[in-house]
Length: 331
Length: 228
Image 1 (cartoon, each protein chain N blue to C red):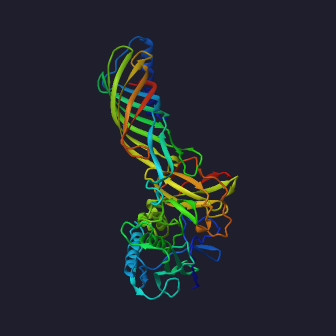
Image 2: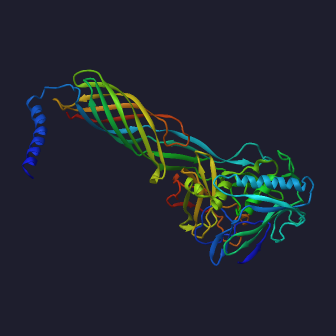
Image 3: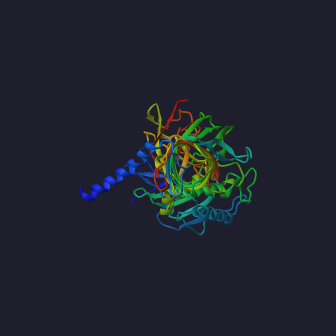
């Protein structure tokens, strides 16, 4: 067994440019040229909470927020996730001590990072052996039920980080705008979008994209039999478009689920979709920070305009649609 | 073929030849249908379209920017009217009343207009072809005498619609009511007639993005032939 600590402030997808992978943005590792998804093999996930109060949040309040966030992920139908609070600890997160630790640290140097998740994993099987969640106490936090203006909602951020802890990468279902000092999210339809809302409690609820993603990793036979996939390629002048972001929209339910073209030939699969006709749309990743989603070393193509696929795509139950080709054009 | 087979073949030939000969001998001997008379019909069909629902792809708005959801894009969908074919087999219960079985087939297009894109994607019409069947039955009451026979009709059916690539299936109940006329083109006991139908077809479920009962018009024009 090979163990490796993978830590970072912007943990995103480690999927490299390889053959088609199944849908959604999941964390993965390259095991001898083979792509392996990161996932827990043993449940419940036992976690500790750093016994340290910070302004606005006590350690028990952090534990309660983590408990609710784990419960939100575990409540997704047709997945079998469970967690167990193991106690308070003096250990800090991101230390690789064989314990899953959630806690605050002062990191004023990470002036744009609210939180991050680290992993120790079996690089052959992709099994997550340990995962820590760091929350940056440099920022003002809130545990108020409705959130507080000017403060980050603790449960929303912990819910996002626990999505990473389970093996999910970032979703690109959101829009941002440039403001002084960085980017601000205008709207998002995934808890796993990499930029947090400024305040409020709206991201305490998982969206269709989050549910499709976690189900794609841990879904049981019930999930596989009740949902389907859209497969195809994104092309520009006949060549594949690496890094294109795709959105499947079901007009009947209003659910949006995203996916990515993760190989140089532009191949993509969006899984976990409701059966029936769906709209497919392709867009470039946010050119402000594509590294938030995919390995920054990849040659991600951002030079194309958003486009709709000109057919409705019927998602079959427990199957994959015929392969489609979404043609995009340079800006 | 043995001797019994020869007799059967002759009997069948005679039964076909007899009405033809009878019509030739008495070209003006029109006969109204009676209980037990059978009629077949085939027609070209046009089924009207309907609004299949509008939707918006919404994202949750960052509360510090605005309170209303962010619209990524919108869809406005319609099942377009389509030509088709239908066939009917009917039996008369009396001179005025008949019962029919009906089979309809058409291939309408579900079209979604995609627009209002937040990032200015070009508006697009996205289509999917639907294969639609209706199997049902109708009761007809005929009026009039002579060559022109108006009628009213009503009945029920089973609607089966397959989305493109046969990956999606929608089934529902269908009720229809309407009127039509038969205009006799030939004479005798087995006349051909021009048949026109116009009905309103109410469908409990059908291809759409919002599930509700829909009423669509159906027009059919074809020929009928009284077999027996």
